Amino acid sequence: MGKRILLVEKEKNLAQFIGLELQKEGYRVDLFETGKDALASARANQYDLFLLNFMLDDMTGTEFATQLSVIKPASVIIVLDNRDIILKYTEEIQRFAVSYMIEPFIVMDLIEKISAIFRGRDFIDQKCSQLKVPTSYRNLRVDLKNHTVYRGEEIIALTRREYDLLVTLMSSNKVMSREQLLDRVWKYESASETNIVDVYIRYLRSKIDLPGQESYIKTVRGIGYSMKG
Image (cartoon, rainbow, N blue to C red; front, side):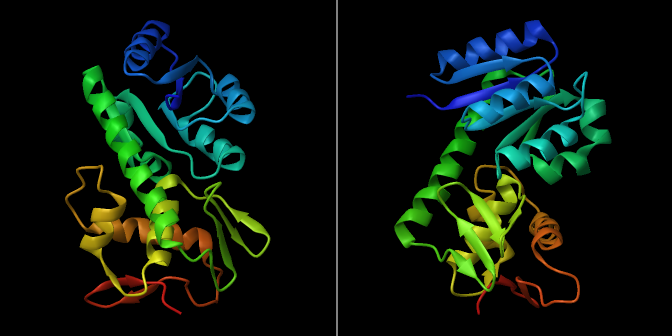
């Protein structure tokens, strides 16, 4: 059965066009015009990926992603919007989305990006299964099946990229360089600057670390990062 995609797009004609093209590729697609209706569907159904217009009529992409992270932790989101919106909100978008597309775009470029992202996700999930990734470190606990992270009994709402980064670090018993992390976590993206790793390490630490306590992620100067005990 094909992977299921939820598309939230206020432009009905564009949504229908994208939806039809995705269906031709074997994906199951549900279309919504508002964030409220899309979130209601996300509560009731399982989706593999979310395509999200950032500036919806009833909420922003950030507000949608924040609410979605409670319903479905570590969801995969691609943002679709015009150049002005993407450039204005790039930092916000990078906090929750694995990628974005600037409208207008060639739909086959979107399809290729989706396919690559699914390959990357499947690679990481398969590797977790094969290598029996440790599911706990100190008081952090990872539910690999549901892609959920706990600190004690508290659920930590991570984006999919933050989750993949955390699991990748937990799976290694050695220090990982920025280049290694870039290859494993961003392999399906064209990110060419290793400083994106530092940015996401900062995002991840801001969510899992507690003030005044030692960080779960160690910085090894001149090399990279580690979660060794």
